[in-house]
Length: 297
Ligand SMILES: [Zn+2]
Ligand SMILES: [Zn+2]
Image 1: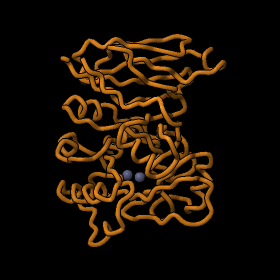
Image 2: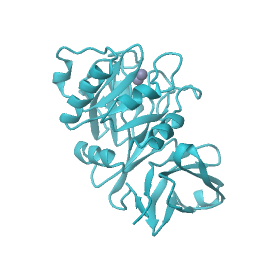
Image 3: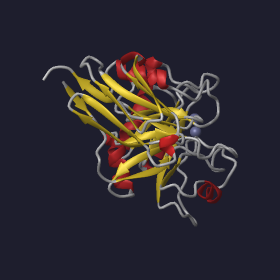
């Protein structure tokens, strides 16, 4: 058995989000205010609808990303670090060919593409069929902080893609437009440095997890066992935790609960993948990337 674990135990954890709006599209706040709303973040992407908002003016966030949310009436797609040339002859028309072309241009520019809020059935959503037809995107927004629990959570579609053999990462972003949507969901990225290059590299490698307030110190393997070191300190260690290990088709492989700081799961070999959701009492959560389990030697 081989377990492919995207988490290294090197570098530091950096906090940030890639999908947020300003008054340059339908956000309520100008860029300057959005920077302030995200004070304390290590990195931030601004992704206005069909526009690349230029980062300018005073800010305390050390690392910022150019981004765009391709926003057809059917589906939305986040492109991080797109080339400016993307805007030449730009169209948000939803065809797989057009979305794929925009994705490919962004990857060629060193960036990445994420299919966002795939379950937002009242407006812009992805069908599984559409997600299967798209290629080369790095991940799916599994937690969108817009504020509709029924529509902004998409672990089902992620499990469906993973179970079909697609190796895509899960993202958490606020998609902040209005007051109160900031700092609901973010990504914790493990990288040697907080630079665009190092953060992007870590994202591409899957060396990050989604957080709504709780976290992992490390996710590692010991032989056939996946060991999850939950974020731990004297206060957190007294609190109750709910840790679930999910496998192919969203099967619950194991649940471990208690006033714990560690949980582990012994792989059988046929799981396909194992991903971990950890909740702290009170509701704060952390969601890992999948570890791929390959049967045989
Ligand atoms: Zn959107
Ligand atoms: Zn958005």
